[in-house]
Length: 434
Image (cartoon, rainbow, N blue to C red; front, side, top):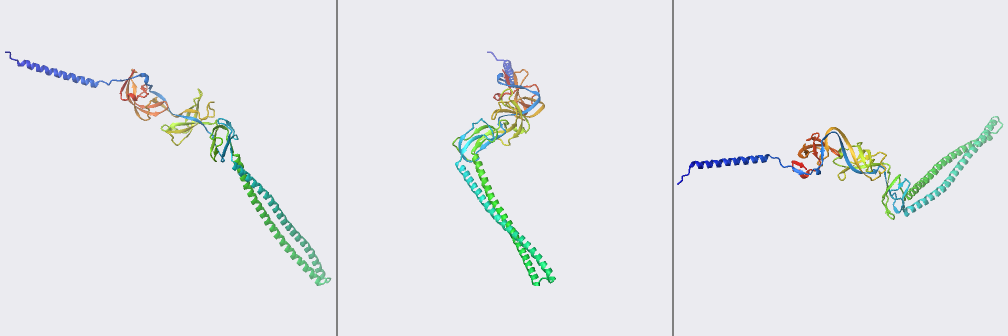
């Protein structure tokens, strides 16, 4: 019978322990190695991405907007009177003068009112003539009475002089005893009586003169009153004449007829817009700028307007006005343009505009990426020297422009970064271009 040896069993247990320890060490090493491996890079087609190199130089801050050319001078033609549209004489697009008749209207009531006003005016003018003749006769009668009173005074004064001479002569003879006292006294009494008659006649003359003066004032007042009535009637006639003349609607300014907003037979009210005339020789641009970009726009800033009419379709202008209100997320900016514009420029032509906000020297910038947010930190993929691998880096962006954005930190001059939309592989920290 064999007897097991204790030393063999012990050796087997030792070997098992050693094997187990080695296995544990190997497994631990593998785990540590795996955890230290970099994640696999996501593959991206190179043709689907756009890149931009960080450069240093002059940075132009610009704002872009779309808009249209509009006339600076626009005449909205309203109906000056109510009426019915009889004829439209001019079609949109026609060059017109200020007195060009655009539309003919009809209003029989207004025409009748003019006739009534003219009839009343003629009647009052006839009444004025009759009144003038009547008052003229009254004035002549007053003048005759004054003349008669003046003649009466002159005759009495002449007679008084004669009687005074006779009385003084008789008084001299009476003192010499050549005339009886009764004759002398009689002559004196006659002279004194005539003197009183002269004073009475002068008083009468004064009364007649005052009466004539008051009569003249009355005549003037009555004539002025009648003339004022006629003036008012004449004004009423002129007003009606102008209203009737307004039945022929005129352009008002020299330009091009843009719109006729009524149809023949249509009844219109006073003040209703009938047409619009614009002066095409003086145009401005109205640009729609996003409200988030308009805060730095100021009057006087240079603007390049592209009329899209060919190689010579760009013109230089300047900001002239900024609308204080926001409509549909945009702000309207008016741009003053030079008098000479491309031949194809006309009202309502669609244009693009670029407003130069400022020029900044010696800054880092790149082509504006899809994730550009002014003053924010964004994740961007920077290409490694091999030009194939790209790693995600945090980049602080500064001021925006139409094409470029300022780089504040996170990149250096010469770095190449992906600027196209990378949201589809935003979870990756590295990508591989293929």
